[in-house]
Structures are given as structure tokens and as C-alpha cells.
Image (cartoon, rainbow, N blue to C red):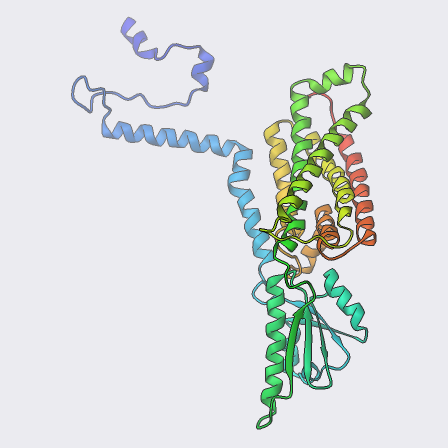
Length: 399
């Protein structure tokens, strides 16, 4: 009887501990030399299979782990696959000023092929068209002089699109010259970018990356702080303390704004060094109120995430799901011009898209108050609506 009891009892511990431990087959030492403690090969294989099964079941039962390992990467595959589906032939928006013989002569199938890569609109106002190119509403302006010189004025904000426009227009000019067989070339192309030729890619990267940094800091800061304070009973103590909720909110918002302004300062100081060569244009100081309004808007997203989440891990996951897709859909890393129409509609509804556009305008395109003010108003309206929604789910303590 004592021998049976000795075989039945393994490691010391409580019954609860034994119930929680995964069932692993006991390894007998019959398979190896006496006293070596080695299990037989078939028993080692059985233990390996049992442990593997336990780990797989544990993984599948953790819904959060399954989501971030399997589903989340798939979301990015679908996102990039959709965004870059038509990236092989960038579609550019071009304004044709007056009559341009080399473009007007392209008809029939040639015209249909040309319109697959160029959206050509006619105008008689060259100054207005150039202003739209500088602002980013158009990619280029084409006009023709009396001597057969075709003038192309393009924006270098998107290097791929700028190169595509030059290549397409140059091809049209060469085809027109080849059609005049046996005669000197009737047309020449002069391509000049509307921006200062000394500008570098940092001129167009800074606004997008700055917007992404501000959004990330505000969303994660608000959501993780809210959940952490709730779990540690800080919110409960603040609720019972003789301090108003307004003071708590104002202090949290102030800290987030100061952090975002510090990010902005660091970004601009680094980008304007001679090594990178960022050149600030227009009323660039408007980036300060833009960042303030954007921080409040992104904090409202973090407030909603923190109100819905019960743990810091969940808050981090919800924030990641919101911030990462929003960054790619808002043009922080690459333009959305070639994306499907329905995806651009989603992009237009995101606050980061408008922050990036307004930041590009005031920092690098010579924009002013008329470019920044509507965006600031929209960001504050977005913050008010989302904060009202988040207040419905807010709780001082864990349920």
C-alpha cells in the first residue's frame, strides 16, 4: 500500500497547483543504462508530443496572442496589397494650359492609353494651375510656346510620380517628332520642378513622420495611462480626493501637449540641420497650433481605447490596431493618390490625414492660415465627438 502511495505522489504541492500544471507523461528510466536517468526514445517522443500539444492549445486559447500573431499581420498584407495594387503605373493629375499640340494630336487608342496614366484637365489660367501644383492639388502643368517648346512644370513632392510625369510627356513629345519623318524635330521639352531645386526629400518626409509621431505619442499615452491608473486604483483615489475632474483632465492634456511640442521641436531642429537640409517656408510657425489641436484629437482616441480596455496589454493592442493602419492610410509614409476611391474616402475621414496635409502646406509649400485653420477646427470637432463617445464607456474602477 505504501509503495502504491509512493508511486502516486510526485512533486510536493497543493492540489490546485497540480491541476494547473500540464499533463506530461512520466519518464521511466528503463530505456537507458542503470542509474543514468535517461528515458527511452519512445517515451521522449511521447513527452515531446504532449508538451507541444499543451503549448498549441494554450496558444489557441489566448485570443489576444492569436490575433496579433495570425490576424494582425494578415491585415497589413491586405492593406498593402490594396494600396500598392496599381502602383506599377502611377496616375498623375496634369493641367493643360491652352492648346498643346503634342497632347491634342494623341487620339483614338493612343488617347485611351494616355488617359490611363494622366488625368488631363484644360485651363487658361497658368498662374492658378501653378499654384495648385505648389499646393499639391496637381502634379504638373503643361503648356506649349509658339516655337514648339513644350514646358512642363512639375512638383517633386512625390519623386516616383514626378519621374513618371516627365517620362510620359517626354514620350509623347518624341512620338510627335517621329511622326514628322524626314523633318527636323518640331518639338522640344523643358521640364522644371516648381520647388527650389536645392530642396531634398526631407522636405516632404518631415510633415508625415512628425504627424505619425504626434499621433502615436498621444494615443498610447492616453490609453495606457488611463488603464494603468484604473488598475492601480489611482483613479479611485483621485475621485475621492478634493480635486475636480477638470483639473485631472487638464493636467493630463497639458503633459501630452508639452510632449508633442517637444517632439515637434526635435523633429524640426534635426531636419533643418545642414545634413538634412529642410527649408521652412510660409507661415511655418502654424505647426504649433496644429500640433496642439492634433494632440487633443488623438488623445480622444486614446481615451476611447483606454475606456474599452481592461488591461494594459489590451489597451496597447487596441491602440496598435488604430494607429498603425491610420498611419499608412493617412499618407504619413507614402501618398494615397493611387489608392482605390473607397480607400481614399476612408483616408479623408481620418484626423491624421488632415494633419499631414496641413503640415505639408505650412512647412514646405508656403501655406498660411487659410490652410491650417479649417484643419484645426476639424481636429477639435473630432476630439469633441470622440470624447463624448468615450465618456459613455469610461469607468473609475474595474468592474
